[in-house]
Length: 144
Image (cartoon, rainbow, N blue to C red; front, side, top):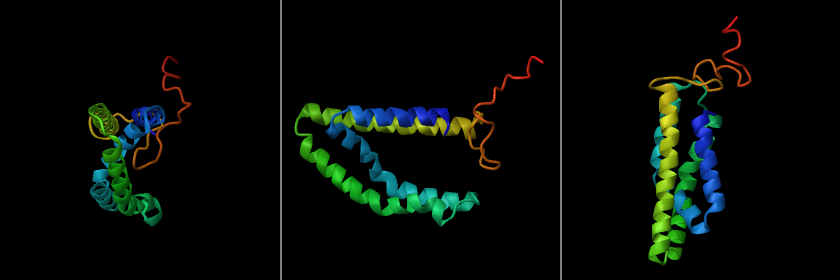
């Protein structure tokens, strides 16, 4: 996992663990857009990656059916429980936080794979697999 992705995921896990249930559920409403995203993701993976098969794509295919159900529940929960302006603002802020987490992940992927295309040690290069062992010291031998 790229370091920026790990940081973003850890931040989100911490957020939903520490915040009130309303905010945690509100942050999940980015799933409103998941079915279309997963359909595009599946098509792209099938087109560009040899490893993409039914097993590799099973999570995304499952989310095509699950995400709409999850969103229906989450949206109803937020609408029922965000019954004050303060709670509504907190729910909106939670959703904004989640989109910031997702942007952070996209920025990390873009930086590693598109521009400037600097994949850190331990990153997956898409062709050969994982680059460099995480315990390798890139400076070892440089002074020799």
